[in-house]
Image (cartoon, rainbow, N blue to C red):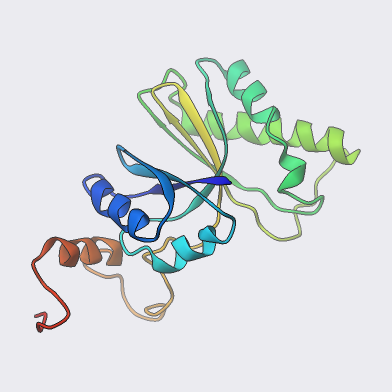
Length: 193
């Protein structure tokens, strides 16, 4: 059983939570700006294909408290990265920090990358990672001194699903537009204008 996290725009948490429940995932937990749920490995693809209001789907690899850079380093280093990232895999790190003692996102990203490299160096017996293989983008969220680390399974954000790649930016994101439709009394038997 895997744990997934779906970040979303503030205010859309309940809608995304309801979407996840309709897909039949278990243990759905709604928090500020994100939803957690438990599911099988194939549920990852179902979430990425079917979610209309969520931003992306992350496979959660670790959650732990961190009030110092050393706690962040040790918590990330304890994750079995070798189970997810091959020797030639690229692993860019993107981080966010909200109301945490570790408030510098760039510094946190650097510490996370360093901890991952240390773990993988020991496991693979190498000192340099070319990162020229497939990409395994990491997202690190620090919220009230709790760290959530996950692999981004969506690639492009879910509101950029490729059908408008050659046109201008939408006035509102497609995920927000879908949320607005879900909040109306519209149904399939009526015309939507």
